[in-house]
Image (cartoon, rainbow, N blue to C red):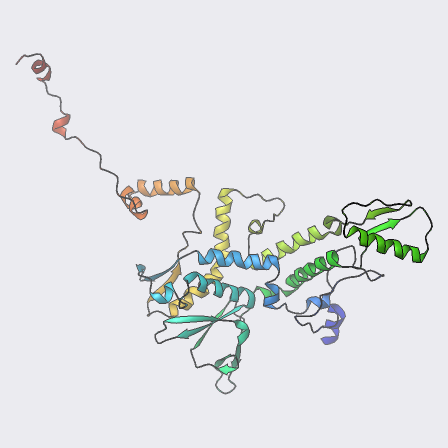
Length: 393
């Protein structure tokens, strides 16, 4: 297996965080004028979470997920009835908001595939979301029980709660987007490194000086040094002796950088389950209107956000008395278009499911004044009215 792996993917490289990223060069040692895919062997290594976070599209994808989830309030139910939110749910982390707790959990699950929460008190009164790099998970060979080590110290049973993005059979650790799609993310990281190398390198001349007269090597060096020294302090220059200067500029689109960058954005959006429109990129043949934007939000919640939300809900529910369940309020994300919402409301009123007063009460408004209804006696016509008005009895 090792020989085949080396043949197809190239030799494995032990890459560290401070290793200089690979760039492709031509025969003269200059960066290639084309965006080439990284060598297969360099994509075999798993990208580190803190390195992946520096990729702009990865950072934005996680930011979108954490922002939307953290805007939804956490509610507590028992037998379908809404209860008052206890402090451990309202503010799980001491002196921090519920938003802070949700964001830390989402970042841990998205980058590491695992989130570790240390609990305090019995019953639990506060929690701390740990840096996943400080936690080691092992299995006791004698008892088969899972053990958690924090900064090299074994933690008491139940002190560390382990949340996982995806659970693989027999695996101690969870499996996240970075672990499942390392190749695409590594390619995005190397494209960013290529961009910086190409536009910042000193190996490519920024311009060419030409002369109509013959000059030897010593004169060429003197002219170049004098020209570079002069333009440092002057905005304009007059070149004598038939000397001309031509700037060498390469447009990003000529490097195929734009196309490859767009492809990387779409790949990362697919990995994290983000709608392409949220990352300001478009897929050909698609358009976004208000209606399908709402439907896209519903699919986004069902296909992407629910994985994170379920882990958070299950964890917080485990801290409460039996029978109580924590749930996110999803109404904020699932708001429909005004036309569709009013159509549903009208249908509910027509079939007698609800009333106008109940709907106004949900919005914190008072009932509308009741219309004055005349009685039947008031509505009946007085046959002697005309005679009384004319003075006749």
